[in-house]
Amino acid sequence: MITASTPVAEVPSEPDLSGRRLGDYQFLRRLGRGGMAEVYLAEQLSLRRQVAIKVLRQSLASDESYVRRFHHEAQAAAKLVHANIVTIHEVGCVEGWHYIAQEYVPGQNLKQLLSRLGRGLDPPQAVTILRGVAAALGKAAEQNITHRDIKPENIMLASSGEVKVADFGLARVAQAGEALNLTQVGITMGTPLYMSPEQVEGKEVDPRSDLYSLGVTTYHMLAGRPPFDGETALAVAVQHLKTEPGRLELLRPDLPEGLCRVVHKLLAKQPKDRYQKAAELLKDLKGLTIPGLDTDWSTDLPGWAGDATAALEGRLAATQELSRIMQIDAGAGRTGWPAWKSALVVTLLTLLGVCGGAVAAWLTRPAPLLQAAASDSIIPRLNRADEQFYYANMARRDHEEAWLAVARYFPPDESPLNKRYARLAAKGLANYYLSNNRLSEARILYEQLAHIEASEEPVLRLTGIAGCAVVYDRLIDESEDKGPVIFYLAQLEAVSDDELRRIGDTLYEALGELFEKYRAAD
Image (tube, rainbow, N blue to C red; front, side):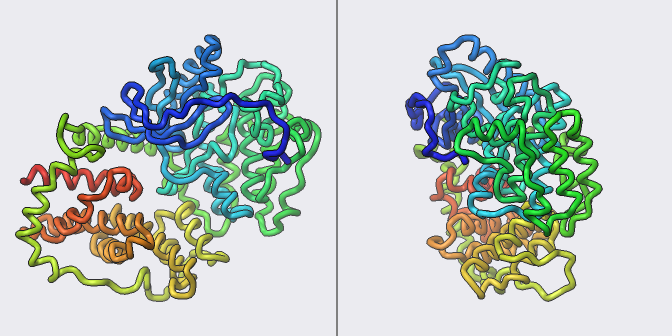
């Protein structure tokens, strides 16, 4: 297979932009690098939001035709608005650096998940990801956009459970019909594992090429390895042209036969023998019977139903409005701290002094995490606590029983692994309760998380504290006792904004509104 020891051409090194400011963006740290671009986490200063920025390599920026294609394709991709596609915010050039600013998706990509697990995914997990990517490709095809680089690295798995496809447009930089040079490392290295036969030959490609690459990716998800490997990129590419992949049903006898047929149809050598449209693939997937997989696609497949895209646009508008409210006032607050936090120091301390005597009356430790009464459940029992958690998070995140099953099937006191994933499931369930306005149930779980030692699980502890602040504010909406809210807000005052963002977008935004509310009430 292709390894780090495979002879490759030297990719010119690029300067590290971490710490620099280019235009409206403060570069924080480098997230990764590739043959065409460097990827950074940055803060867009005017909107106080984190973004991922792809910066075109300087060695390529000297080619004007290459730069024109880069901007043209990125601008086309920016028109794609879909729940399963990473949103592109801006395309531009500052001080000679050509960049694409896009949505930052906290979580991991599919390659990282597969590397960590070291094996194939269970059918419900794999099909959930497959459906999300297929929906994204269907939307792109409507706009006559072909991705050209579908692979696990470009499939993002958000901490919220959403599936998002990245790098639309950037992968179309190569001119149509340009012959594939398999020694151009950095441009094609790594890609041959997932390339379609027509792409290998340098022929014109269309959305069916993306479906082939999705088939290779799905095969990898289920088998735990790609269908082809070799000592060189050329050896892999030749197999895409001439070799049939091993049958999935022989590698994984536990897989539904229908799912194996779907994957092998995606992997047909000739485009005419594959699915012609993503909609055909989705129709076949919907017809499969897979235990543990939701059949309600209107909620389980974000963005495929028409109203889901409208919901996404509304959510983006709400985020932008919140960002506008949280603009930094020049000179306000300490360096690196949002003004909406700094302005509350005096308010919080004052209110906490008034209300502090009441805090002890309501602050009690709840029962053990997710200790629910035994009940009949439609949720299948998987092999390990982490698998059970990922099933709940990816396939059934809006299903209460799926979250409860993690601790019911894998009691937290039996092992450190069980304990960790029971806590993560508690976070997921608490967020589920909060989104469904089941505040009393959410409060119990958030308080449990808030009592975790900071040295053990700092992010989960912050999630619990933030969740308690939000829930208590809603519970006491008509009460005069603001003590619990102030108590929890005060604990978050010294926490950096970068740390707070790790609790998740929905809770972070609710917390921002809460700080703004209490500042206005001062």
